[in-house]
Length: 561
Image (cartoon, rainbow, N blue to C red; front, side, top):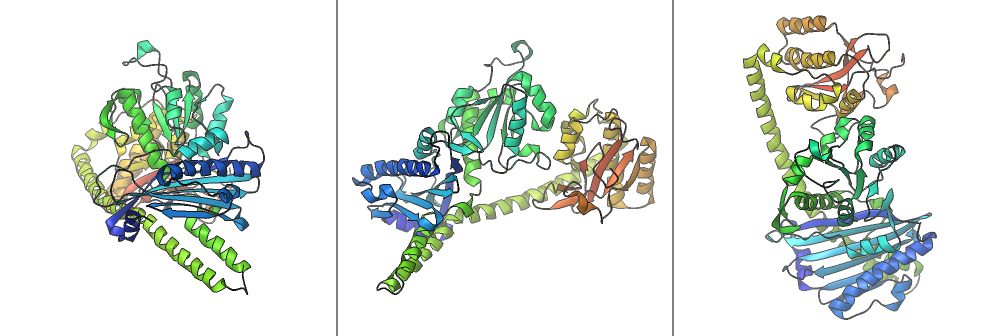
């Protein structure tokens, strides 16, 4: 192993950074090659040819002939390590390349590719890591490995749907159901970039093509990084009605739906939306371009860099594959078990222990970047928390000084489709869960003004009552309920809440992993007609001093309904 690779791995954790630049977890497609065994063998040959080209170029050596049928090998010479190992009891084949960076001193690269056959499926997982000194200032380049494009072209790769360098052009309303299921699939690992069609030329400020980014060029550029979906203007209206305005995109905007999407509980802001006016004025200068790019070209480079960050930070399906060091240790264990009672068993076991130790040290090093990043992130979160509470306190003081005049200045929209944007008027006082905003956009309730007035009542009088207590605030809140002809009541009994699963819970807006029970609700009407009946389910979050609205304006399920 080269001196720089040894140096990089011997350095203490705080002296180096390990950055994941690309990874992919996908299954081999069956359209080109039907039999799983044949797909496995073809993909292994593609990977070996890819390794062999670099091995020949760097070391003037070739892949050993037995390796082409799955035999293990390892070549460690002049700063390069090329190896592959088969673990027969797992139907697993893994290879690794370790090499110096060609231009940056003391920077090394580690690339793993694993193939594992599970029933009729063949899983492929690739991971690329870059190890640098913490003092290194050179940007880490971002590239989709050539081997991934080769496998896509010759065998095919699926991420729920095929991964390709071609856009998915939506044509029928029926396809929207498929799209919705695909976006919400827990198995999806790549982001989805949706291009939408602008309004007719005469109604917009900027002159652009039918789609602000060329779908064919964008899809090819994002091959192996993201799926590209093309939404024509006509279908865009149906899409908005289906998923709700907060989750939609239209009029030339581009939306990125990240993996792990949950339409019911996720925050739509986690899935970025860029409007047409923003895209044509975009500026980019970063790891993908040293010179400043402008407009559509800049935004496409920005999209690509963000896609790299998304795929590199997603957890891999570790239970379905084992990378090189561990796989090699498993193979040694198999060999040792077959040699029980024979000479050399003790030596085999020693080798296995040594390999396991190497793996442990290596995995620790590969997790350094996660540790360093999470520590820095925690510090940033703490700073932001302090700033958020400070800004909220200042906002409360300003609102208090303005009194009822500020309340009168809050606009009341005519439609609940505007709820997402309107909620900025109660920022810091009340938070509306994404599933509530989505439900509002699809609602048949015929009195939107009442909904907005009820939310203002919760954001102001109710919140002041919870913060300050006292009869004065309680009376003010009760008078507001009477004015709006609303009643407050407990939403569901503790003994029955478990019967409804997650329906009466929402995710905490600021504390990942924590859920909030919607204990209370405001109500008006009881004829079960969604056009006339209002229900607003909410809870008080004392730590944040925030009203959390989790559902409106219709009933949630109870035993009675």
